[in-house]
Length: 77
Image 1 (spheres, helix red, strand yellow):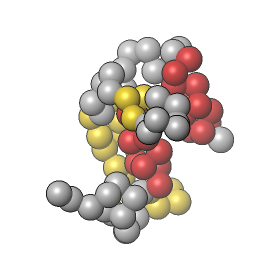
Image 2 (image 1 turned 90 degrees about the vertical axis):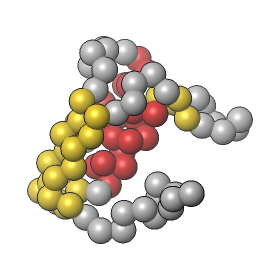
Image 3 (image 1 turned 90 degrees about the horizontal axis):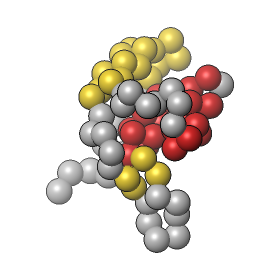
């Protein structure tokens, strides 16, 4: 099995591009069940250099669905 997502990429990148797996959820029993898209977008943002660019194909309801509000707010900050 590969490295955990937290340590798989210790370096930073100028650009990160991804096509996310839509509709999957993550979380343990003690955590809220969150959209996997949120986790992967956060990781993509962490991997970027200061002026880096993140390109992600998101579901068509990304801009309006309440499930994505947290990550939308993080992107705008």
